[in-house]
Length: 144
Image 1 (cartoon, rainbow, N blue to C red):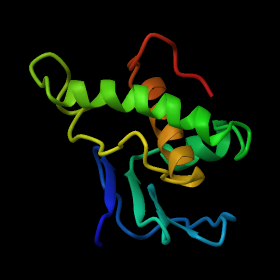
Image 2: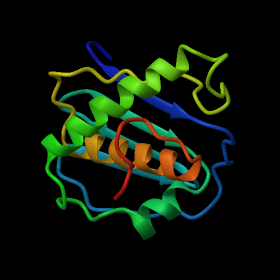
Image 3: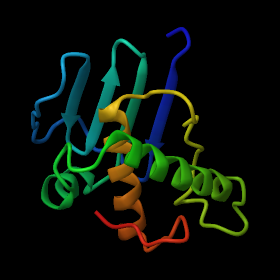
C-alpha cells in the first residue's frame, strides 16, 4: 500500500485461526476482524492498519476497556504519542529492557490522522500491555 503505515504489535504466542469470532460495529470506513486473539483494525480511506496478536487481549478489551466514544480522539493521540515514544525507546535498549516484551517498534507519527478506531485500539493495547506486564511507559499510571 502506497503511503501506508503498518502498526504491528506482535507479542508472544500466535493462536491458530480456529476459535471464537466476535463482531463489532465500526464506521463505514473502518473494518474490524477478530480471530482468536488477533485483532485487525484498518481504515480504507487513510490506509492505516493496526494488528494486535496478544493472548488475552480480546477478553480484556471486552471486559475492562472503556466503551468507544468515552474519550476523544485527541485524548488517545496524546497518550499514544507519549507511550509509543517510550515503548520505542525501550525496543532500542534490549540490554536494559526485556527484549521479549519490547520486540519491535511501533510506527506512530504525530500529525497523521489515523482515525478514531486505530487510536482507540492502540491506546487500549498500551493500557493492557502496561497492566498485564507491570510496565509503566510514562510518568503516569495507565488506567482505563
